[in-house]
Length: 230
Image 1: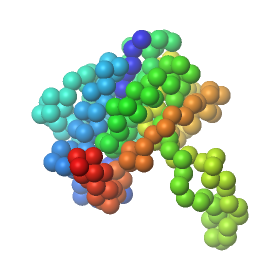
Image 2: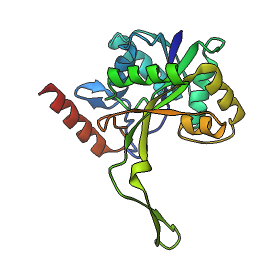
Image 3: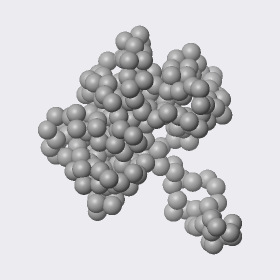
Image 4: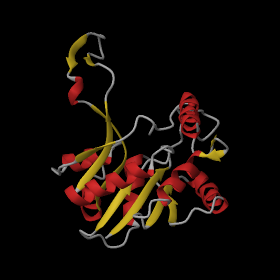
């Protein structure tokens, strides 16, 4: 069995700062993308890593990988104009897929994922076919009429989960789904699989497994890291 990790890292991070790229910003002295790649690379079940990034980040990420001596990086390639296209480009770089190969997809901007979560996601996918990492929603969720601001309904919180990454699928299945829906623009690979009729199974993530999106997220991430050290 072979596990290939695909890391979409082509986003501009416009919600973070228009003059900086969040993946290159340092978290406790180390770039965000380096944290992510080191964590993925540390999991023995993962055989190779393909990073899908933008033209202006490609060389910088290669330099980071060399500086921090991150193994298992097979290629750093150009992503697409959105996340879905970036993942598709990464899938196309894999060896001829079969049922004994799995693709693990993880956001480059989720540096605090634990090795334990990664391993559980892989184990769940191997046993059941496809897995996503998620956590139960803490807040009450309401459906709102966007045109008037009126509350339409309150949705049962017990049924709602916040989806994270990694997400793990059989390589032949996720590649086929991406090929079939390549004109879509979804931000979640599991949504494509669901659309194609595949069953997806959840394994517990962590509220610490945040995606760096805003400047406030850096402070939250550093706080989580400080608590682990203590």
